[in-house]
Image 1 (cartoon, rainbow, N blue to C red):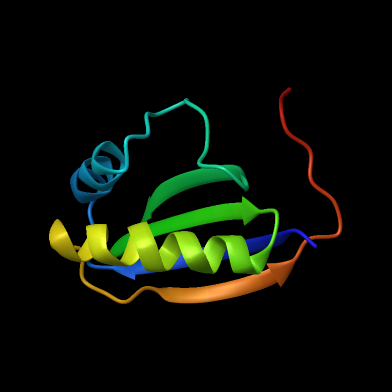
Image 2: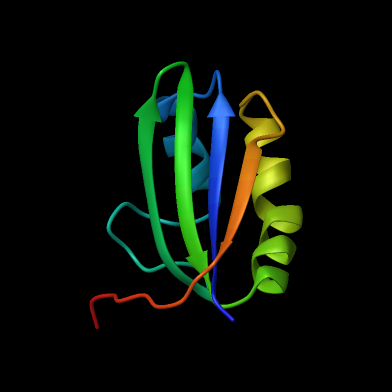
Length: 95
């Protein structure tokens, strides 16, 4: 079952986010990592909010352990993020 994850990074900046994306080998408007279905980010009061939809929670958890956690720490994003998970009933994406 698909899962949506909302990650709030209090104290995080868009500049740090851009560094994380670059270190992951990703690009704005480009494809997502394998098993990720959708991704967006915005600045919120006092930090960043990242929202993802993944095919499964296990796939997200593996990516978070291998990439998100270590790389956000490397670029100085305060963490860990506040995370909320949602079971996804339906999603739509560009093909």
